[in-house]
Image (cartoon, rainbow, N blue to C red; front, side):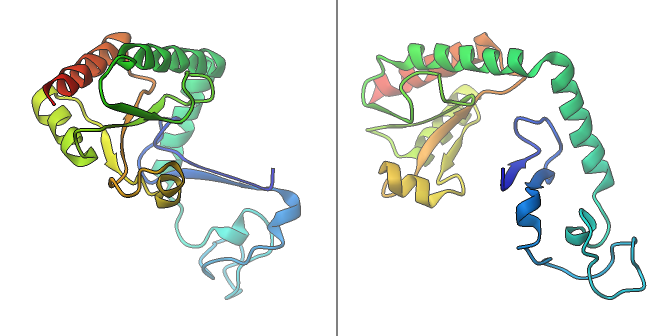
Length: 194
């Protein structure tokens, strides 16, 4: 691995604002620090140390966030990562099956749950993504994310950019089969109205 970056607040159950960046040994020399000073390890030097991880850690670390992220990861490891992956795959498969007959539905990505991570992006032909998200929230109490999801290039590639993106259903550690069935039923009900 050269680089691996992930948000801490999604699948890792950490607080918002946390994340992980892993830099492979052969790549760490290629990168220059974004900020200089304030490491605490070589305080007398105005320049960043060359040792890792200090090279990229200026200023005060978000200790509460790091501890929260650590607790989230520890919890997932105790529960079993493979068990969690399998559970999310089953929830995703259930959702895809439940919405398969939805009129005017476009699902982006793999047709089955394999290759997905508990996320389904979709559009209803008759409703723009923002309106669909608002209806799901206000009429059914279901929160989804609509728009470009910080990835306009991905939406350009899959053809949803001109629509303003997609509606993203995300299933996580605290999602149940009942949650998934309710989301699917709500989507079917909305599709039937248009």
